[in-house]
Length: 220
Image (tube, rainbow, N blue to C red):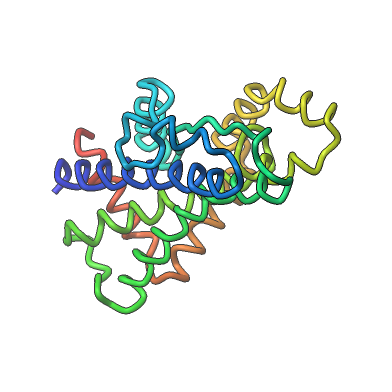
């Protein structure tokens, strides 16, 4: 089951990354940034959103090491073309909203018993782990840490100097966040507790997620 689970989850995860970035681009276009269309962002072709290390290798490494959904795509928005700060906020939230569509769709399959909590079922464990990744991507992305979407959603409302300084230290902030998620017990337990609780509310037992993660890491 392991290798099949790896392929199913990876392919659908890449699709969700494309939809995440498509969401950013589509809302940006609606908000006034006409350049996103010329840049080729109105597509589900992952090559339009990716760089090999940041967009493919790192997200898969994060999934393998910690089972965390790290969106790896990128779209370049010309925010100077957006019509208002409200549009800037909407652009930032559009990506996580696309992940939310995945969560609702997969969660409904479990909630209404279309998919059973059967750790021997390839489809069930794959979808349970994919749901876990989508939830973790949403929770992670909405944290108010630069350069994540959660910070970018309220950054337009900050003073220019505060915003510029925050982005200048974005890599440091992001690195500190990941260190905390891995090594600071209260932060780690709270983060994963929220994610597992959301999954449980959607009808996915933690055992199914663990089964999916173990199956995904078929080489261990």
